[in-house]
Image (cartoon, rainbow, N blue to C red):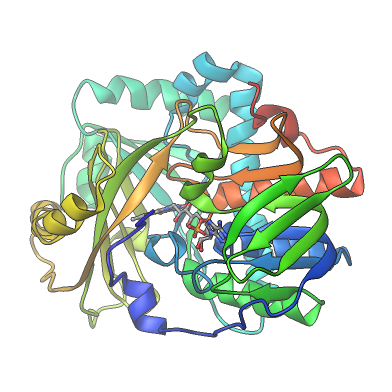
Length: 400
Ligand SMILES: Cc1cc2nc3c(=O)[nH]c(=O)nc-3n(C[C@H](O)[C@H](O)[C@H](O)COP(=O)(O)OP(=O)(O)OC[C@H]3O[C@@H](n4cnc5c(N)ncnc54)[C@H](O)[C@@H]3O)c2cc1C
């Protein structure tokens, strides 16, 4: 698949952080991880911490799939509002999903603290506003549902919003739990930490054939060498749909722009994450080098040629939408890109085993919370491998 346009901001900013060798001999190992994006990196980090031997293979360079195109807002708020999610998966599982995402943000923060380099992580409040008067009703019921399960948030009236922001909205939710980071550099730092604990990484190495047996898995690579493993973890992002007979995702194209750096450090109220009830939604965040990122204007197709052709136009539309909300900020576009984006029906990830692939786990963190879901996937799969119960296993399994 062609996952993104050429020049996402963090890829341009950081460049090729590190190259790894391609595979040159065949190996036997406990765990083979297919995919070196943020999901594969978090899985490798969790497994090597447990002393589990693993080999990671990526057909591209590390982090150069969807991960480097990610705008990396970390939110407990799943694209499907809590009330709606309850109708899909039941109240108990919906509540648990929201609460697990809050915990996941805290766990990501702890991981970033253990790494040797800064990865652009900071905690941020998250502001979710009603795009229309009609959506103000949804805001009120969401507030109550979230409050009932102990989520720390405030409901804002239109007057409150006018005091905090230069734009109006009929109502909004201001949540304490949110964060942001540089997903690309985070992925590389996780790989460094995992290598120190014994992870072997091969990039430019594509898995071209998978043979799953009763006692393990044999992977054939594009170079002819093989990797035999007791278990395989498929963390190959949106391309993983190709290994499943059942369709579980819908593909969209999404767009983002990043401004030149501003001199002022405070660009709006606590530089919080901002998004809205409309679908597709417009969203905004700041960066650790004082820029503004605006994303959205999604279209419901996967067609890389069409996506690339309209990226510049989408960039202009995003800038206009931003200027309408923040007329006093002189937004000068520095970077503009587009990427494929996948969503599931209920907004939750698919994590775990599938009958058609023995000895294999899938870690598919699809949706706007992809990164938070990647952390959950890493924990669920690690726990399954070490025989520990994980409350997410049932919620995010394929047969739900
Ligand atoms: C524009 C945009 C904005 C986004 N914004 C957010 C956001 O604000 N917050 C958020 O949480 N998420 C966001 N996401 C989603 C998030 O970026 C993804 O969920 C995440 O990057 C997926 O990571 P991954 O490691 O699963 O996939 P990838 O990064 O795509 O990594 C998978 C890797 O698998 C490799 N691979 C595939 N097939 C094979 C094979 N056969 N052999 C070997 N290797 C293989 C690929 O080369 C790739 O490097 C956004 C995504 C986009 C595109």
